[in-house]
Image (tube, rainbow, N blue to C red; front, side, top):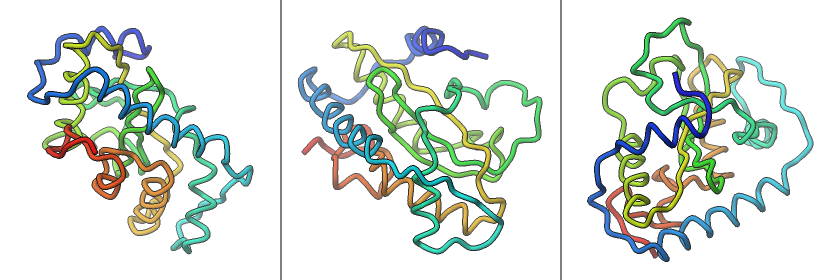
Length: 192
C-alpha cells in the first residue's frame, strides 16, 4: 500500500485527463482561497479535548468534539486503499480527503466500516479524479490522500452530527453543503 505523499503523487500520475477546463490561475486562486480559510480555522482551534461517548451529542458537544480533531495530523493513506485486501475488520470513523500539497481538506465523511467505505460508487471519487486531472495540463503539484479518525462514535446519529460539524468547520469544497461557498467545476459546477 502507498503510504508516503511521494508514493501517492506517483500513483496519481496515471489518472486519465480531466473533462474539466480550468485555467492554471483559476485553479491556483480557488485552492488559495480555501487554504487561507482553513489556515485561519487551524490557527483559531480551541484547545479543548473532546470526550466522545456513544450518546447523542448536543450541538455544543459536537462543536467541541470537532475542535479536537486535526485532520492534517492523521496518517495519510492512498485514496485507492479500498482496492487492497483488508487485514482488519474496520471501525466506525470519520475520514478526511486532503490535498497535502497546499494543504487543504477537500472532503469530510463518516463510515461505520473504515476499511470498506469507498467500495462501489462514491461521488467523491469522481470529484477527486477530476480535481487531480485538472492539475496535469498545468503541471501543478497535487498530493491527494485520505486520513481516518478511528475514535468516532459507534452510533450513527452522533457520528453524523460530528461529521456535519466538521463539514461546517472546514468548509470542505467537495461536500455539497459547501458548494455555494467555493463553487467547483469538479462536481459539475463552476468557479465563482
